[in-house]
Amino acid sequence: MLDSVNTHPASIGKPTCSLFRATFKTIQWINEAMNLRHAGMPLSAYSLHLEANTNTAQRIWNAIRALAALSLAWLHTTFGIEYSSPISIATVPKDELDFDTRINNRLIISVQLILSGSTTVRLSCPTGTLEEFEEEARCIGDKLKNKPRDAWFTYAESLVQGDLDPSDYDFTALDELYADPWWQ
Image (cartoon, rainbow, N blue to C red):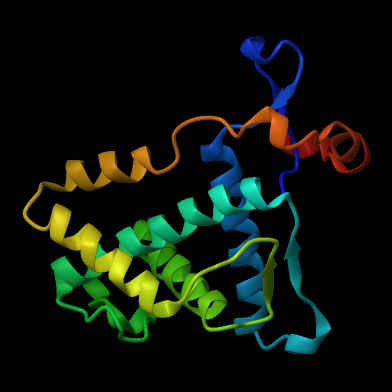
């Protein structure tokens, strides 16, 4: 699931990876797979398998799902978009389509497709349901409804804090085989 690791002094040489890096790298891979889908690539031609032990995969997936729920809550409180509405780029008024909004919409769409049972992306952990995702977005929206935008960013940062537990994995062998020196 992760393409590289860092050695953290506290781990005494054990490979570690921040939840932030793992989450956003995985989001990048999911978005790339979904872009192929939306570009017309036949679904039978590819799928993205994100493999890790269940604990690690669950922690990363929970962060991804929570970030998407936060984005959906922001769309609801900012534009009045219903939590159960299908999201697309056309969902947001054209004058509001900044880079972050486009990325957030893509993440929401990707998570909704995964929760709907799309085989484009396969995870090695339970993903939950669309109803649970919408409820999570409602709870986040209720919590942050009248807060300034900085509070929304602070909440997003809190979702990806910490390192993954080094005892859950050892990516050394994978890193040696598949690491891309251009991305390190």
